[in-house]
Image 1 (spheres, rainbow, N blue to C red):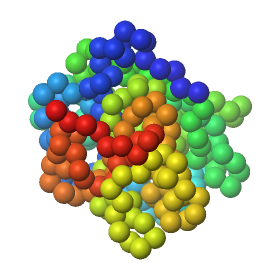
Image 2 (image 1 turned 180 degrees about the vertical axis):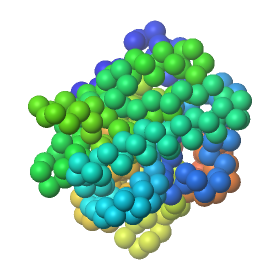
Image 3 (image 1 turned 90 degrees about the horizontal axis):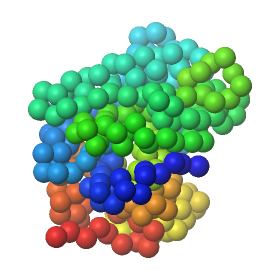
Length: 278
């Protein structure tokens, strides 16, 4: 489904590509995530930031007297909700994130999945409205920005390829991050969330999982809610050799520490192995 980076680009850059998914629960909490993105960039990594913004969307829905509906961690999206999602995520949240990175001395560019047809998708069914799933990914604009020294900041508002006059689509930021990590053949994918990691049936955080083991937790109902799209994104990325970490973004500098030292949260890879560090 996804288009990968050209082979020469893969050899030169992919080992340094880090896709970072900022959750709405982390954004706006004055955490250190963007400071870590800036530090990683200055140290030679190639960060790609994918952001959510559920709290901001819910705040604007409340202002407009629109009742949000969340199922398994994903937003049922009627047309009014889609308008708010597009305005808040591709507009306000995206540009605020870019502005914060610029303040940290980093050249950042804000995009949505619509730009250059980067993320294309289809609605998943009438019950979901304009919430959809990705059917195609073209990472070429991201690869170009990385090559030119920019940090891409991606909103998950995407292009609706269905035969429908509504051209925009709401896709959960977690699978968007997974699809981009796979298409870019990124070394790492990190989800910054508000929990310490994936918990087992007894409530203990699991340090390491294979893709198959992670899928089992979803299929048996051990993993629920917002963890489900994260796990599915990690499984998708693992097929391209990407190692995924799910960590507590409320912890100071956890992003930088996880990328450079590891050992935090839950790690998911094809064979259940953590990334190695020099």
